[in-house]
Image (cartoon, rainbow, N blue to C red; front, side, top):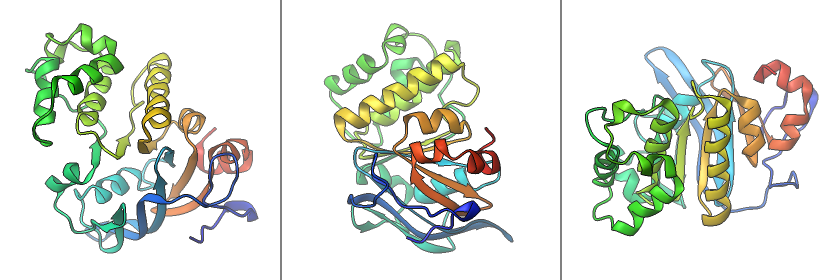
Length: 258
């Protein structure tokens, strides 16, 4: 993958702490393009997400971050390029098949069904997977004790952070190999963001989950990620180790706003 790095530096598709590209990619995006009418939202995006790693996709509003996740999960049909999951070409796979293939997508906006209880929301999410045992519901409640306490409450009574925990828990019921997360920190207090990101890190490290994390809060995302991918106007500007990107003051000011 040839990435163009701003300010003359060289970018690498990096392994944690090494700056080198070695691991087998679970999710591969190759030269992916997408458009809304005459507006090109993605312009030849190439990236990879490996097992047991968090890949953060960063950039300003309009960079193409949300469109990237929607195109990977089949909600937007690409105009070019390819998406592979564990070697299988899923570029044209129907949206409803993605859960069975091992991919869960948590879109921006914390979409819960307000009239249903927490427990009912989880059970609705499990319908896409088929039979889900009690142990798997218990696992989600163990991960998110706060929503366990409120399992009989209607979702409209939950705080923003609790709703975010609920939609992530619902996605995890599918036992995904790849979790696509779109702006999970949006509108949340820093303490709740740290709690959710810490849990993601725990899941990745203990269970080998691969997370593709879209975030505008670049500082928080890079603090928990292994790899950072910076988008600008639908194109990859740089892909590098998260710590390297965090330390690059010139690039941060140019593209990430801090």
